[in-house]
Length: 525
Image 1 (cartoon, rainbow, N blue to C red):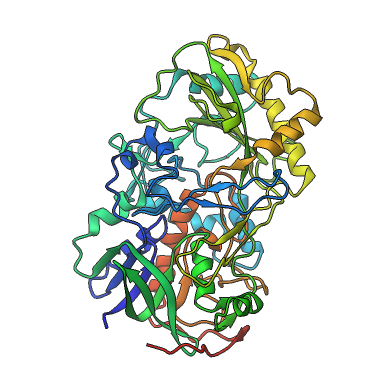
Image 2 (cartoon, rainbow, N blue to C red):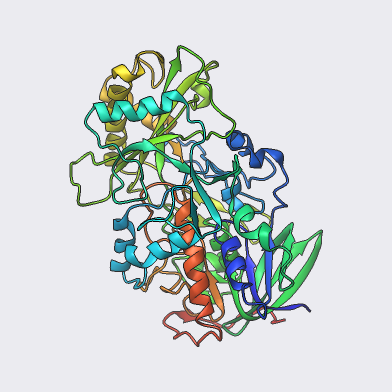
């Protein structure tokens, strides 16, 4: 049986970073397992083709269960199934979040995760086209650049926001987050710069790195409460690999808790109902699911908007505080693009532009659970969007703000008829109905293996699974609360910080058993 120092499960936004950093030491061997295939699909590398990847063979194409507050609609939940993970299918916006986000994480009992603690890790990854500064780095692997040829109408979105009294903000990742500006993207030489392109491809020749694609990990292997390896399905055959140091679980917000549960780590009652022997009774596994709900405001355009192949569906944006409290993170984000993005019932052909109203800190909390003990079955996902009426009302406020913005003179030469919600929807009652009819995800799920020390925490502040030795979770699932804005850059940061934590703990310590840990029934390898 093959043996490695570390096994990383998932070559996504965090996993590629971890694999890169750990193999910088030529004496450290790493096996990187990815369920998807190499990132050879041409559309991956063309920024403007990002939406064509959704639902394709490089997407897990998950759906939620019927959502009780969204007229029982099932919500499409795309996740990357390819080298680079979701960084290979996202809209490439580089957004770190708000300093308050990380200070809040620390206040929840996670020392070392304040904004000042994590800023160096953001800078470490970054190669900023704007040069080095207090907030930006130039020595990192990830190319972060301004739009090469933004559509004129995207600049008009910024102009209109400033005309209405909002701040102009040229750098949403700098001194402040609120205000309007053009976004920066993870693009290099006109092509998508995923974590696979940035962190993995340049190191594939390292002799101490083994990358296996098409490898679906089916369970973790234990001796007592010590993680000793993994079992995975590759080309129709089950394989096992043993680990000397640690297994790093970076399978993402849906699949990391799924694999923990398949391996006997999770809520004991749920595992027993699935016929899975309990290794550790951790009731928080799969809980605390958070995401940013969005609604669409779209208009016809009176002329062609001349979008570039190096563009994204999100070129500009605005963060604001609807309640005027500048001491907290903004509660609304608007993402603007020079194309029509509307639900199927509002289908439209021809040029147009859209802004999404995004609720940055909604009250909805969902969950991930097992559908069956079969590793090839999709997990059960319940998002619970808009379970709070206050969230609905705040999205209505966002729609009204956007209508006001789009009526500004900056849009006069571009503005056609309103496609969505539509001019017939003016009352609060009509707009609330519209919100529940079309509310969707902006693809930022986090939180299902949250970091902390409370009874619902899954990992400690060093990302070690409570009560289990030699196992960490390193991806967006460890976020105790969702960040303000797009979540890819924070996930990359988590990978960077985790790699340092792992390196300083070469021989993993015995973790105090604060939780109900039992000896597994299945045989060790």
